[in-house]
Image 1 (cartoon, rainbow, N blue to C red):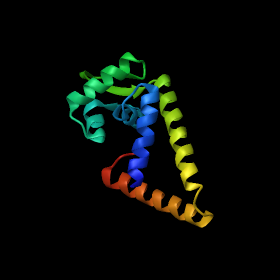
Image 2: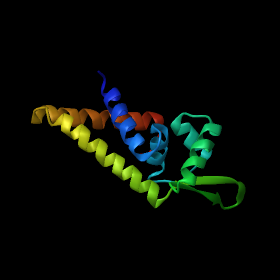
Image 3: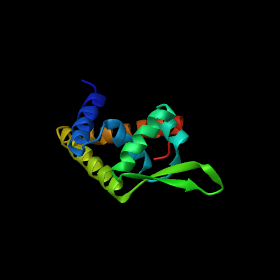
Image 4: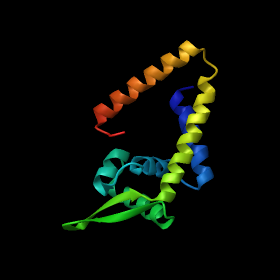
Length: 134
């Protein structure tokens, strides 16, 4: 089984507990530390802009995100996470860390260290190649 399947299973369960989809969780995580335009959000999520509009609409109705007008551009809006959305992100992030930590805890200390360094390297490479800020 691949690690990605384990992470997806964890996220799927946590998303269901929050009444959200995994894609909605991803969107909230992306918005956790920034406000960005719909087109940029669509690019990061690798979705069509119309799909992102629906995601944002549903999350906004639940009070998890809000649209903010862009000064000087009446047609443009940025999206940002609300305190309620940020709370969901942090809850899910901690739950994922705890579950993956339990799995990693089955490894020896040296293997845990190797895993941690390898993951940090892979994440940094991915972020650099995809130009996605952490």
